[in-house]
Length: 86
Image 1 (cartoon, one colour):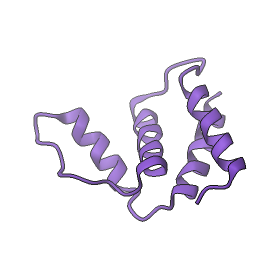
Image 2: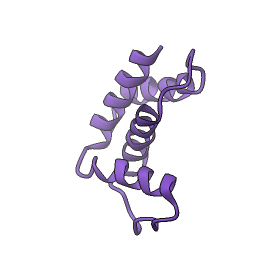
Image 3: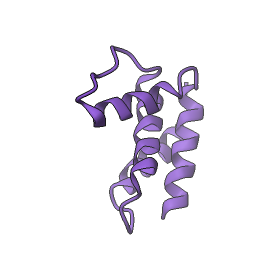
């Protein structure tokens, strides 16, 4: 379970992710999305979206790559990534 300090840093980074000076590229946006989902929901669930849903499929695949990553590790990586983009 995340420590209070890590949870606070994560929550702050989530807010800051919406206020970045410039929009990150798609690869970075996928990384932000997948780390957030892994941190908040754990391993990916459900079936992979079909061929016509390319955005959904890319999001699913990015999240699936993090399978087995702990919530705390995902939170730390998320915070570090957002910090690097500021």
